[in-house]
Image (cartoon, rainbow, N blue to C red; front, side, top):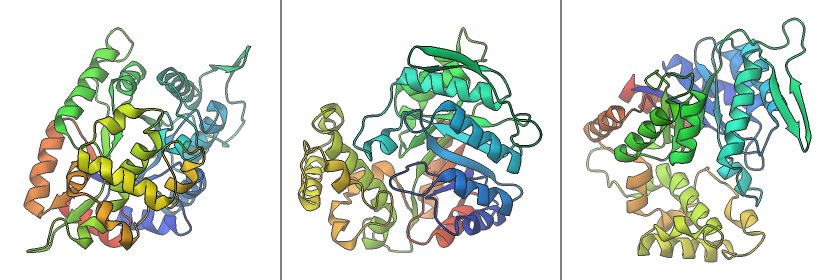
Length: 354
């Protein structure tokens, strides 16, 4: 299994990209969450100039954030800086929209956006719509402003069948956040292959799949649910709890799937943040410091059940055995999201998988 890393855009991000490349990691991704993190196109431009081999990914953008022409221009511009090394993750904008207090876009909107990006980034015209006005558009640049000759890899963010079907119809790979259940991955891959049937895309063609998680390699006799493990995985757990708290009123199905202990943690999180599941400004209270290192006083919310579901914590042998199972389920690359000490965590990942 290959290895990569996902980080937030911030000054000095290119130094992390250089280290990731030197460690032999396959890819380096930057989040696209405008009100929480810096801009990924700015960050990856710096990374493109500082590296020569590692693949550079947007993880992930959305039609609810950027128009297809703007996103395609950014991607093709990056492709001019790092030819053939660009990966674009696309999704409904679940996180990036909810941090604005808005709902994500639809699967149909995601599919139209993906198709437009694929066309534009390959130098083809595409249909562009604003309200009732529809026009064919294409890049009009002359010279080397953008690169539409070298291919850009596209992957669709999926946790369920609708997004996986979009990936199948568009011939893309998959990327998923915190999904470490091999059975769920088998289902996603089956849906993707089934959706590809009857299209110009070969259902059995190779399209890479990525999973984003965190990794904590235990020292000898270390508590797998101790403070160090909770700090390394807490950003993933709190992201799930924040999502459950945010969607409890308008999309209760997700929260209803949680057990009693997890639902109690959601209630405590709302109380601790001074908001409610129906407050119109709850996104302002729930998402600050999103996917960053958690505060020590929030360690009690990092439940062992959620750590085991969302993250990889264990001895070297434990982790390798679990990763073998995930690889057999169709995952090609493990992406970790380090928050405690990124250089050290990237080194651990490299030693484990490369």
